Length: 62
View (cartoon, rainbow, N blue to C red):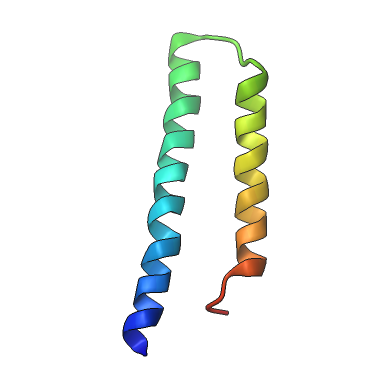
């Protein structure tokens, strides 16, 4: 059963890490190019924040 717990951790952490790196890259690219934020940037950050806050409550490992 411990193998299942490791698989669940990996299934949660790998997409979360990829999403976090994508968000960091998106924000860094906007700052480096000095492009103003548009509505999709705000929606992206809002969705990321909502998902990060929601994932702690629904994590099946706790």
